[in-house]
Structures are given as C-alpha cells and as structure tokens.
Image 1 (tube, helix red, strand yellow):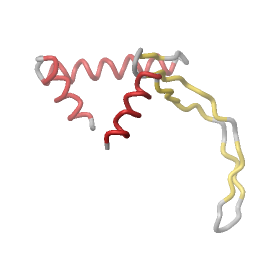
Image 2 (cartoon, rainbow, N blue to C red; image 1 turned 135 degrees about the vertical axis):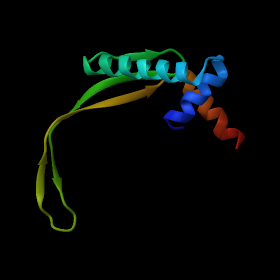
Image 3 (cartoon, rainbow, N blue to C red; image 1 turned 90 degrees about the vertical axis):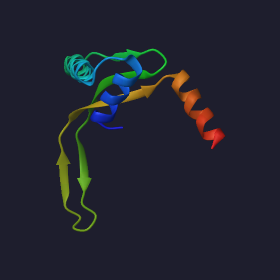
Length: 96
C-alpha cells in the first residue's frame, strides 16, 4: 500500500473526503516523525511498537575487492509487532 492508497482507504472507511484524509495522514506522519526524532517510543495497542535504536559502528568487507570500510554508528527505527498482530498474521498463513 502506498501513500495514495492509504489515503483512499482512510477516506472510504471513515467517510471523510480524500483531502481531509490526506491532511490527517500528513499530520499523523509528522507527529510520529517528531516523536521518533526526539527518541521516544510509539506504541499502538494491537499493532506494535516503533522505537529508535542505535546501531554501533562496524567493519564491512567488500566481497569482490576485500576492501574494508568502517561504517559509522547510526540511528534506525525498529518495529516490534504486538502479540495480537502476530496471531492475526499466523491465522492468515494457516488459511492460505
């Protein structure tokens, strides 16, 4: 699902216009981005948690040239699914 499909789905399920759904989506993404940028965890009951984690610096080796490169530390967003979502996904794979 891409951005436009998400907006269309929100509009259809909520009965609001696509313009309002797009505005709502943009505001939501902005709030989530700001919270994660501040290092806070975002949790949605029955969906999961998003949190920022620090990846330590590491050494990478190019397989063809064997050149070693130091990759600096960076922050990444990690998602951990809730047990409810995990069960729903498990049920879907059993029905296929």
